[in-house]
Length: 103
Image (tube, rainbow, N blue to C red; front, side, top):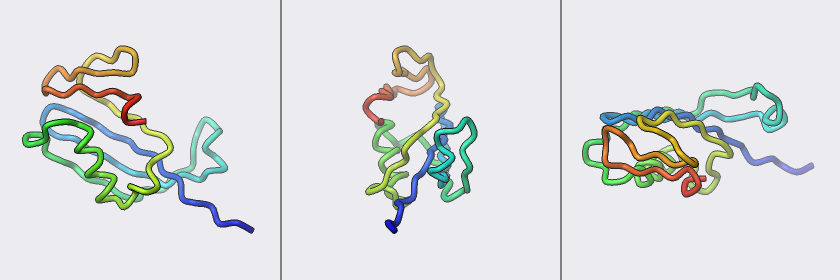
């Protein structure tokens, strides 16, 4: 009998002023289905004003949620800007976000 590592899902809303992240623990048996069973783990809102790039904010969230060594297996982010080829240049903040870089 082997212990399973916890698996997490990240949801986020990234706007010009604030970034809101919520981390959920997912039941790995249900991940492959259309609806994953989840339970809330950690939530945090950040002010974007003094943050130079999105990736540093995401790394801070992972550190504060104690998931640096076991990052989320999936994420869904709402970002203020047009998405093209899994990349966004935000319309109201000087951030470029590459989904492949954060995967």
